[in-house]
Every structure is written in structure tokens, then in C-alpha cells.
Length: 326
Image (cartoon, rainbow, N blue to C red; front, side, top):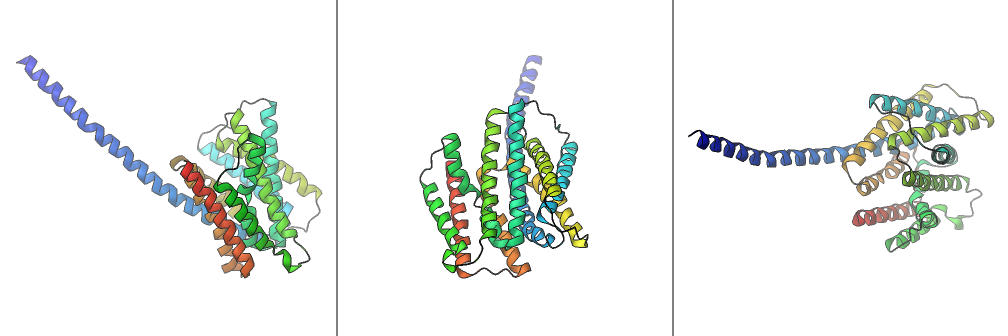
């Protein structure tokens, strides 16, 4: 009898165990679906924060020069990222040789230093919508740069996307209009090129060194902040006007555009594919265009709007190709 009752108990336990397995699997699937929905919401909030920040950066230039504001917001961004690392109990220590640190230094100069100054100077000279679209030509610079640096051949839809982007640039620049200066457009395209070069350097670092995303972001921003502070010290600019909006813009960039938005981006990357996250990030320049239109009255002309749409369509085409490959 004892043996039979023991067999019955073991069978019941085994049955319970078999019944518990689907339940745990269903729980994991439910959590994954919930996290995916939250990640999409996080990307939407991030796009709103970064997209509207184009207007904030434009309006802040009424109170401070581009070099000075870039340096100040980057220093506050470093402080915010350091607090994030401390809150997440992650260390800043990274064991790399000198070559690795030189690459991180180069990344900081390109991604934080040159990009910030070029983008801010472009906003000083031009409109929010056009600048945001031209800066987001970055992926089109990455394609030929990756071909040269890593042998990644241009294939299929990439050629079509590049052709669409070139056509969009021509429409945005309107060379037949015989304007006196294209300084703002050149600065914005230069910012996109600097961002593209920084993307190649980041890939170069990732290929040879194991460095966390948040640590790499913080270290490159530290080096970029040092370069920006040196430039702001040397380049003469108008003195800072300590108006209330100046502090609002600094707080927006430090707390929301750097701190919160980066947390949202990292959470999205952890719960979505990089391709899907990349497609969702295309909402940033779209929000920038709409914000400049609604708040600053920067209504683009027919050719300019057509060029923006063409560049945006080319970006979507590249992202869809990435999703299909995924």
C-alpha cells in the first residue's frame, strides 16, 4: 500500500509539474508582450522629447551662443548620465588599452563635440524643420562610410534610398532659387556627416572592445564636454542672458532630453529589435518639423516640403529593409 500511495503522490506531483510549465511560459509571454507595448510607448515619448527639443534649442539661442549652450547642456548631460549609472549601480570603470580610449575620445569629439556645435549653429541660421530633416540624413552618410571602413556593400533598396535622399536634398536646397547663402543647410548636413562618422567609430569600438552602451555614451560625452568647454572658452560669443527660458532649456536638455530620453531608448532596445527601434526613432524629425511649424510658424514651401517628405520616405525605406533582413 505504501508503495502504491507513493506512486500516486509522485504521479500527482509530476502532473502538477507538467501543468505548471505552460503556466510559467504563458507568464513569460505575457510579460514580454507587456514590455513590448511599454517599449513602443517609451519610443513614442522619446520621439516627443527629442523632437520638441529642436524648438527648445532654437529658442534658447536667443539667450546664449551655440558654443556656450552646447558646452553647458553637455556638462549637465554628463552629470545626469553619471547619476543614472549610480542609480543603476553600474560602474564607469572600463579596462581597455590606449587604442580603445583614443577611439572613445574620437567618438566624443565627433558625436558630442562637432555634432552639437554644427547642429546648434545650423539652428541659429535656419529653421527647425529643415535643420532636423537635414541632420537626419546621417544614415545616408553611414552607407558609403561603412562600405569604405568595413566592406559593407551597397545593395538593392539602399541604392534607391540614396537616390531618393539626393533628390530630397536638391529640393530642400533649391539651387535654382539663387539664394545668397546656404550656410544653415551646409552646417546641418555637416552635423549629419559628423554623426555618421561617429556611428562608424562606435561600430569600430564595439567590434574590438566589450563596453556597455550607457558607459560608452557617458565616456564619449565626457570627452565631448571637455572639447566643447575648451571651444566655448576660445570662441568669442555674446554673453549669456540669464532669462527664465534659458534655465528652462538647460533643465529640459539635462533632465528630459539626456536623462529620461536615454533611459526610454535603452528600455526600448532591450525589449524590441534594433530595426523596429530605429524605425520608431524616425518620429523625431517629424515631431521637429511639426513643432517648428506650429510653435514658430516655420511653414515650409512646396519644394522644401517635398524634399523633406522624400528624405523621410528614403529613411523609412532603409528602416523597412533593416526590418526585413531582421
